[in-house]
Image 1 (spheres, helix red, strand yellow):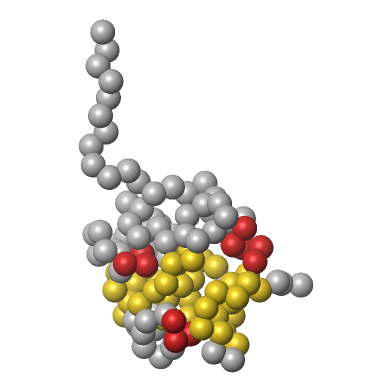
Image 2: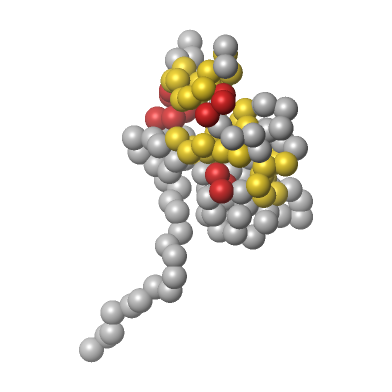
Length: 127
């Protein structure tokens, strides 16, 4: 039986926007709200270069990554062709105006994913 973790009220997620949810381990989860008040959750990391999807623009049932404008489907996390890749998806439950995520999914999937480092990498000089 699925155990659900309360995240927030639906009204706490901006229309056509997102809210980030911290996890005990791993990257945050982005919870998105569409214009028709549907709610979706993806790992807050674009499959292309690791951009924060929570900062992207939501349109229809998709989000545009803020780094390179890749279109990611909110239903399945898939990049729109010709781009390829997938952001891990999390189950969402909306009940009486409250948003819940699957507790087991929050604890386990996509723990190996990391956010890219910004800027150039400096290497130590070899003597």
